[in-house]
Image (tube, rainbow over all chains, first blue to last red; front, side, top):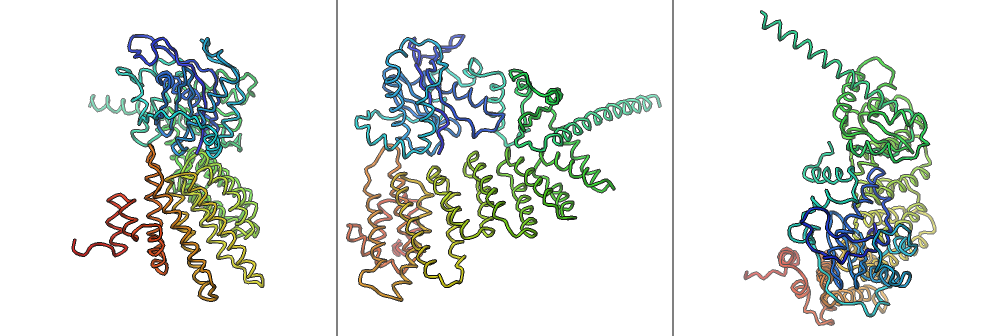
Length: 210
Length: 416
């Protein structure tokens, strides 16, 4: 089991989740805090992995409505997302991390964020650049789901909204949106990463590297 | 005639072009081998798309050594022991390495040529068994520990980007065997291998080959090391409960412990130690089963543990019967676990459903593997108001699992 990244975002409210089929990029979520551990990736894949985590987190958070909890399967990852009153926590985990533990962790992250920063996030318009120590520590601590289970026992008032499960990231997108075109438009991804994405897509079809 | 001349000229031209191309490819190979030679500590290789390769140079700090700068030109990039090769030259480079290897194989050249060509070739294509064999032949000429250590390094390098490559794992085992034949003390080497496998397993999940390598090392371990390994892999298993490989490793370690029954006077203490160890493993496994619902690897581990445990208890009971049967107590406990799993509330992730099925199959499996306790199991099931094994099967299992189990247990209705 592995937690690769924890992020806190603020989905844009100007037409949140609406289709961005018109030219240019649609409304985008703002990344308030980000803790990512890519040490298990190959040295040369790390920067692309980092960029993709931000890109996928933005894409999923923007499409998680307030009060909604959803899990998205993306390649070998599960991306869990919980939007509470406009503040959205996103976690990247592998398949085996228990879903319930993942959401109690997200709950905890949102609690702590509001405790540390109050409502200042409501006026945020640009990505946060400072590290938030709690999130970095949490990324290490909650590699063990047993730690998250301890939270579950404390969080009595855990809201019981149903968790929506998505088999692919495409099923989160609004009608008319395509992942490929989002990848092309995204400013999070460097040319190299976009190439990496296309290559990966191609190599997934047949198992060769050349 | 004229036409013939024309085509001959074209062919000659083409040949000249071919020769030029070949020269270029050889230059590439030469440079590749020089890079490998200049940094023997390279621990990771990446084959990069040209766009990514080009972005490596820029955006880096400007304090790179002149040598690194030189390498940045063209198609190789090497810094901090990480080597990047631009993917566009791979086919050319591979052909050059292959040709160089074939021509040097039978030529009266010093072995260093062969070694450097095969190294280049194997990094590009680790499944080239002929090349691995050529290296083995050279290494066999004279035992040289440093050379064998280099060999381990080469294997580790290839495994860094191709962690499931069997040819490389197999070569690694061969090298270790050579060392073991000369050195008596393998303790330090075994330790290092364990660390390597652990690191590789972190990066590629469910890597059966890596874990099998670790299992393969067990015969080289002392009893103390086996115990240490058990202790060290506990945490890893807890964090990777879905990965059966590590549990399989633990089973191999436990079996090894049973084998290393050093025939000394302290066989009694050996027995009690093993007994305690096993009991603890059962307790630990049950704790994990309760924490993580519906994980097959955990139940498989429990099958293994219970089978030996029950047989042990039965044997003890035969030699010295006591008032309270330990076997009965154990069965009561296991049926308790079953009924708990069967009665878990249904949740949205279907985990409890899977858990119920796995627990049912576990009990059925025990009844099949240790027939001596089948009667006791049935008896005990009634007391938690389950009507026998068939009822367990009907209550918890999917239809496709039912039929084979019905047959296995002789429960199938003969009229059907």
